[in-house]
Length: 288
Image (cartoon, rainbow, N blue to C red):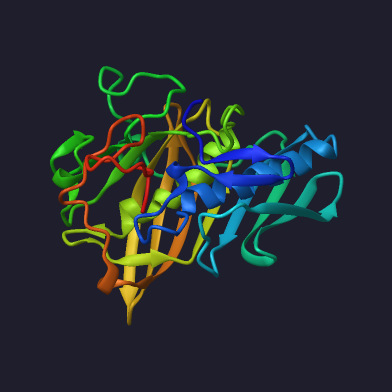
């Protein structure tokens, strides 16, 4: 049995220990929630036989705490046309909807010939060197970059400098490999780790995730680099660039509310590649 967020029991997904959040012992984190939602949307598109479309926008609403209990995921095709397909997915626990996602799939074509502004290569995020983070598909402790450079030591990055992360996707379901879409959709929840993580830990809890994609990542390794962070009256908005080793592929935007009384403090937390924490509990490392 490898690392995964769920195990499949019929039509139900049962959370594995890796899905447990640092916000509470019985809470599931957003990485696992998004993994289940995106997997369901991707399979619904496949059931339609639409291999001519790719995900372009993916939005998750996290409006109730998801518990560490068996969950079902349902999909509804809202609109299907020649160049578009919109699929809504719900996550249901004990008969109650706790999260939802909307995925917009679009057809691809040739780029128009006109020139438009984009950042220079020097302004683009750069992955960690291959000697630190080789290419592959095995999940590992996330790499982070801040003022101290690249490392997997979380305590070193508990500072106020700009952050970037590099991660490998964890399979949503045990025995079912991660896909490029479930990888980017789940790791997008780590936007909080590059935009809301500061000198005192993560003091905001996100209420949503929005991903925009011009293409899927190559493989299951993805980076997030902070673009902006603004906050007023306890509400924050964080924006990050999504990239792989070939370059930027889109953006992620996250809104969050202040949660300073239950701050996730990484000052004394370390992880191993098998998902275990130093104290022996098994939790996820990509996000809070």
